[in-house]
Length: 226
Image (cartoon, rainbow, N blue to C red):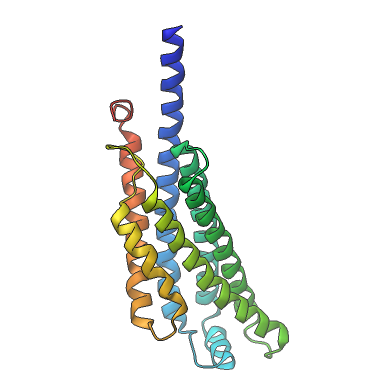
């Protein structure tokens, strides 16, 4: 009976380890998608004072801006997938950990919608500005900001999750808390420089968390002794 319980416990630990590694891989891919999104967005130079000017810039760099939308769409899907694997890795009852997962999944879904809107704008940029295009442009901006803010709230929840010493799924709580709070300034239009700094910090957190989960998950001997 005791051996059976030990085997069951080890099987559960192994499932958590694999889920952690999968979460880490998806976070790394999400970081890569975010990097592509930022680079192509800068190259497309579509952030103009008016919608007509933005569409003109998109029309001149249609393929590049399309890559921006595709990367944003992918980053949202990858973040949501990583959050679901984290839920499996944490194996936690309802509480702050579950809230963190819900917020990150919601962020991923909303960000994916923003990416879809960007793809629509890329496809329709050469046409005339009408009510539909204005609505899509508004939704792209709104969902982009909302998805970013929701990711920040998710990081705050991650930071507040209770962890045991040596927990292999801890994800740099102090940094997650600071970055998550700073990400809420996305709603302040005047904080343009801060948006860039916080965006870079979020990218670095995704990268660091992904690498940490991958490395800790690869250490088969690390879980039971922690």
